[in-house]
Image (tube, rainbow, N blue to C red):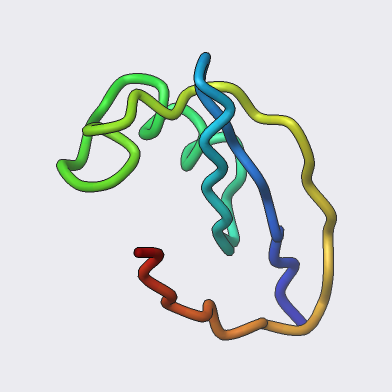
Length: 66
Protein backbone atom coordinates (compact mmCIF):
# COMPACT_ATOMS: atom_id res chain seq x y z
CA UNK A 1 0.00 0.00 0.00
CA UNK A 2 1.05 3.55 -0.70
CA UNK A 3 1.45 6.28 1.90
CA UNK A 4 -0.34 9.56 1.29
CA UNK A 5 -0.07 12.86 3.10
CA UNK A 6 -2.83 15.31 3.87
CA UNK A 7 -1.23 18.71 4.38
CA UNK A 8 -2.05 22.34 5.15
CA UNK A 9 0.09 25.27 4.05
CA UNK A 10 -0.24 29.01 4.60
CA UNK A 11 1.25 32.40 3.75
CA UNK A 12 1.96 35.64 5.65
CA UNK A 13 -1.72 36.64 5.40
CA UNK A 14 -2.75 33.30 6.95
CA UNK A 15 -4.53 32.11 3.80
CA UNK A 16 -4.84 28.32 4.06
CA UNK A 17 -4.29 25.71 1.36
CA UNK A 18 -4.99 22.00 1.81
CA UNK A 19 -3.69 19.20 -0.35
CA UNK A 20 -3.08 15.49 -0.70
CA UNK A 21 0.12 13.97 -2.11
CA UNK A 22 2.20 10.81 -2.03
CA UNK A 23 5.48 12.79 -1.91
CA UNK A 24 5.27 15.54 0.71
CA UNK A 25 8.85 16.77 0.36
CA UNK A 26 8.51 17.25 -3.41
CA UNK A 27 5.11 18.91 -3.13
CA UNK A 28 6.20 21.42 -0.46
CA UNK A 29 9.25 22.25 -2.61
CA UNK A 30 6.96 22.87 -5.60
CA UNK A 31 4.73 25.20 -3.59
CA UNK A 32 7.62 27.14 -2.03
CA UNK A 33 9.36 27.60 -5.39
CA UNK A 34 6.16 28.33 -7.35
CA UNK A 35 6.85 25.51 -9.82
CA UNK A 36 3.21 25.37 -10.95
CA UNK A 37 0.91 28.30 -11.57
CA UNK A 38 -2.33 28.54 -9.68
CA UNK A 39 -3.66 29.30 -6.22
CA UNK A 40 -0.45 28.66 -4.26
CA UNK A 41 1.66 30.75 -6.64
CA UNK A 42 -0.84 33.59 -6.75
CA UNK A 43 -1.21 33.76 -2.95
CA UNK A 44 2.46 32.94 -2.21
CA UNK A 45 1.63 29.86 -0.13
CA UNK A 46 4.94 28.52 1.17
CA UNK A 47 4.82 27.54 4.83
CA UNK A 48 3.84 24.00 5.84
CA UNK A 49 1.82 24.15 9.06
CA UNK A 50 0.38 20.62 9.34
CA UNK A 51 0.63 17.19 7.74
CA UNK A 52 -0.60 13.71 8.51
CA UNK A 53 0.31 10.41 6.89
CA UNK A 54 -2.43 8.00 5.82
CA UNK A 55 -2.69 4.76 3.85
CA UNK A 56 -6.04 5.83 2.40
CA UNK A 57 -6.23 8.27 -0.50
CA UNK A 58 -8.63 11.08 0.34
CA UNK A 59 -10.17 12.75 -2.69
CA UNK A 60 -9.63 16.51 -2.37
CA UNK A 61 -12.78 18.59 -2.12
CA UNK A 62 -12.67 21.58 -4.43
CA UNK A 63 -14.54 24.46 -2.83
CA UNK A 64 -14.39 27.99 -4.11
CA UNK A 65 -14.97 30.63 -1.45
CA UNK A 66 -16.89 33.81 -2.19
